[in-house]
Image 1 (cartoon, rainbow, N blue to C red):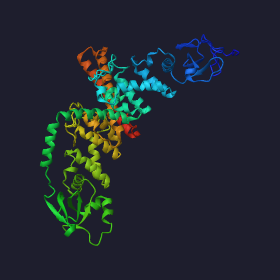
Image 2: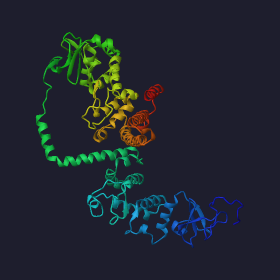
Image 3: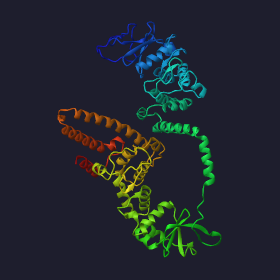
Image 4: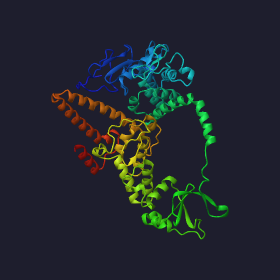
Length: 543
């Protein structure tokens, strides 16, 4: 074979490499640890050569040695070839302890090149670490006290065939998903629940975000299950008492609708005008109100009342009856705001519960009553403003210390809001197109307890739950970085006097708070705000 004048030409499928690792057409090739002098084929990966035997690879025999460029990494290929060609290799010795990367390589390349014995060996070792039977998991071969530290090994190297760390467990889930090893998943997910939250959040599962959420929900479920087991007797007693003490109040303050066999029993609601002209019924509760007021404020009701009625319509207390599909609490709140001129629900100085504000938003939107929807949006914007200056005034609590679901998030706003309501605010914003509320609402809800986050079923899908967890992880790192900046400022030249030091510290703190606020959408992976909203937020931060 003649030499080519081009010194840097790549070695192709027709090149022959001699025993010294040199081609007739290129510079010396780097030898790998797998290099048999009497080999008859050279595999090349990432500039590294592996001289082995054609026979074990089941390749076609030709004169000389054929150099084949492999798509695999040199590290993977070296591990694979060592297992195939070296009879003394530790990789197939059942008594040796392999790293997780070595076992992963055997499975991946064994499957890719259809070497069954390598696949079986990898699966055997994985099944030993993640068995289907409990007795195999809790024997001396495993550690039952799973310490939550990244650097610690999940299984003790002295008694297991694989050296495995916590950080490897999420990779095992990905391997199991990709290669259909479903028998590994329960024990692998159990192992992942012992990982640190920050390590889980950096995982990008092969099966999508569903597996990440499974870990968080499984962790919470296991914790709750342990508590349930400890309190089984007490809970059983409580449930029995609850069953027998449950009261049925449906018979109180009832009134008949219709006559004869079609008579309907209802409960009078809180909105009942004796001279009303229509009775709205929801979930067995009736509200006698004025048809004219409903039609004047809502085109939906106006069209509803214009629908031709049957010859013998259902009546109650001399008025036609309309059966509503709305939640009874929402309907009562809506009718109270609409029909009572003195209703506290439209009084700007009154403090409403979050449930009342949510009802006004839902019903005001559904029945297109602009002033009721507008009042709900006004109150929500006060709790979850777009401007930092609105968020940090005396109307809100800037030092959010009460990290429990039962505590009020704001101390003096027009909505009595708890941490548990923040996730409902996110759902309302998603459902009713109130995108401006999302950054502050996500920021608020991330301070809730893990239980509230992991039991949430978001209107916008599980991605919103992951946004809360990932955003919290990012903001914790941002806070630490900001504190380091403040510490460096305090130690700087501008801090010779105490008053100067305090002023410099406060200036940096306010600057970093404003910077963090403007990046909330980025931290929670939310789409950019409309141009007008972004400009308002920027001017507020700079002000």
